[in-house]
Length: 115
Image 1 (tube, helix red, strand yellow):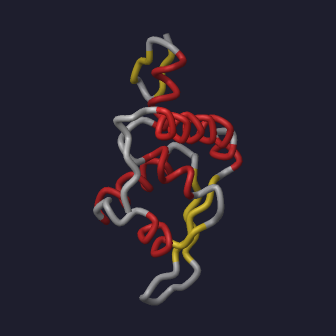
Image 2: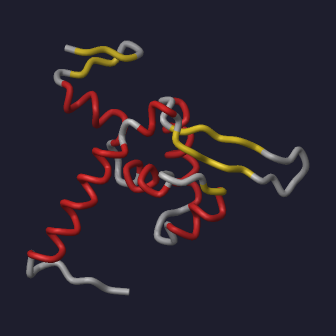
């Protein structure tokens, strides 16, 4: 059993999913392999609402996976997000997930690519 902030996780898989679980966290993290401004990230995820992106970014920052940097003090704010050293440890896992999806898309007749 593992415990973070009084929440228990029965195995290491559930512990990992605490960090990358949810519909968009892994997607956001894979995009943040390179540093992005909020507006750039938003363009990469047009199907995700701004509220959802903001909430997921806050959780990822609280978990220590990403770093938020504000470059201006007056609106409009220039905000950049990047992986922390801890966050970069997820890159091999995220790339493996991405490759699995690529192979599934290629080999599964039920998966169609649409633009």
